[in-house]
Image (cartoon, protein in one colour):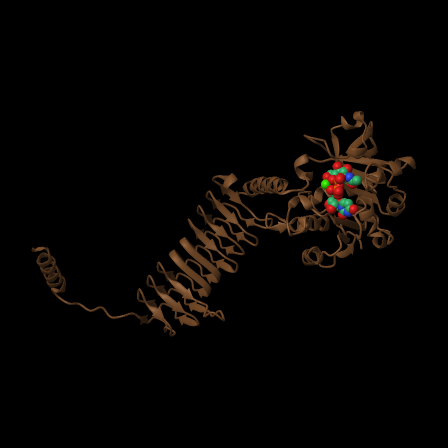
Length: 457
Ligand code: UD1
Ligand code: CA
């Protein structure tokens, strides 16, 4: 129950019961993805990293898909259903059982605000350590309309007033409420239960926890975050804006860590992409989830990688495609228009042009000629191709799996290999060449004679 860093236990309540109608989607809003991970997944990762020892996810009724995503992303997360949407405080109170357990810190997060950093949740917890009963997170909004406003008396956060309930003077305030909040765990339940619904929307507002605390002379705190970090997602346009912000940050982080991006704005990362030092990434490269690139590797332009591991000083592309399970050893080369899936490419091996390698293992320093295809699927099952160290596969060969090419063996160009090839041997499996001397001369003469005869009247 206790966060090892601070010695304080922490409960995180993640609100994910929204309907998300403005997404105009069959999929629940919080399952839409930013950088290859659901919004909910981002928020769960952040609260876990901020030291939450218990996480409750509040979902809407009949949302097994949201429950499944929460369980997949954070096994051990507690999932509760908010039967009716009666406001953010009401949503938090659906985790009453957990609040009653008495944690030191309670943090509330919104599942549709996925860029909030773990460090920001930690700062909110820090305000509780400093003695605040409620800590709110504010930001200077470019356009404050619609947001709750921070009503400050000097340094003290006196209240948060929702836009719909705000006076003209309050609407002029630009310091807005990001929504997430931290509450003293020993008082949270009592504060939340004191909140009423006498307001413009007849909802129970979480934001009223501030005024309730102040009425009891309890200290509150206001922290400030950049708007870019706390922007929420209601529609697809905001989804794209958040994606763009994520990519902007990730590109900066990758470059700061020692990789060169020739045209950063054309490279797209996933939330978990790992890029080493002295990696060179040319323009127009897309990383799906689960990719790691070791030091000194080069990813040439227009490549697409997903679930792949690229070894030190290996090269990919231009126009390379690495699918899940592709693993390139040190200095391996995957060239243009080559697709690799579930295959190990040994150190220094070359697969340079126009090739499909799937369900395979290729030894060190092997050379795979242009147009080689591993025939790994018979319509029912996948089978494996094994190519030994230093083997040489001639261009335009089909390797019908399961099949093994021994170490140092040669495969003649254009072969269809259906049987294993012994080490250091040559296998040729194609029609023999037939030579007919003078055939072309005779053919042309006969054809011309026929054409001339047809022209005569
Ligand atoms: C909320 C804040 C507002 C802040 C804004 C920032 C309140 C009362 N207002 O307003 O001060 O400026 O966020 O974006 O908190 N939810 C539930 N169950 C409910 C209601 C909401 O789970 O019954 C969830 C939503 O799915 C969403 C979050 O709580 O993730 C915020 O709810 P929303 O209705 O969007 O609040 P706002 O009106 O935007
Ligand atoms: Ca909102």
